[in-house]
Length: 189
Image 1 (tube, rainbow, N blue to C red):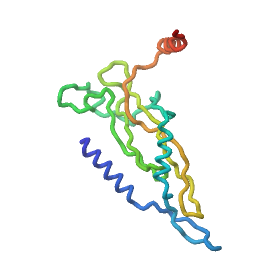
Image 2: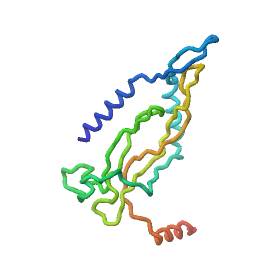
Image 3: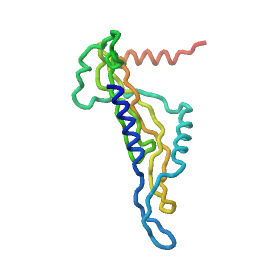
Image 4: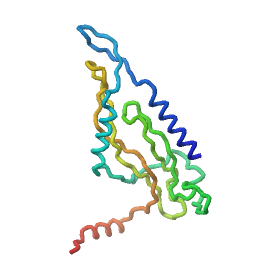
């Protein structure tokens, strides 16, 4: 099942990536307006690679969403305890199972981003623990306008929060918050 899902996502990416990305715009050429297609700039992939390299300096850290909810009814796996025998999948052993999906936006580069979706609100096999999405600010280029003089799209650097995993965590309590505050204010010599 996982191999089929991965193959499907790859094929979907190839199909979407090979479709034409042109949009009609009016362009002023030699004193008159003509129709021209707006196209991706030739340096788009290099610009994205540069932005991703800059972002790897550590300014985009993983965080967990404290408040979130599942979309509708939870699947059966959320009601079952994790299994740890030798023939189980990672999903069957996971305290916080997840699913994968393709996040597609035409006006973003990269247009396709693989994303995780937490399936359960409560952690399986652990009383009192919750499943929390782990999100990351991913560097993207956002399409903002078409330059009519060149017929090329203009992009700006941006980030987008993408869920990269699900983690089992204990809920916060007032006592834990006080203890964390005390330990961070202590000076060690």
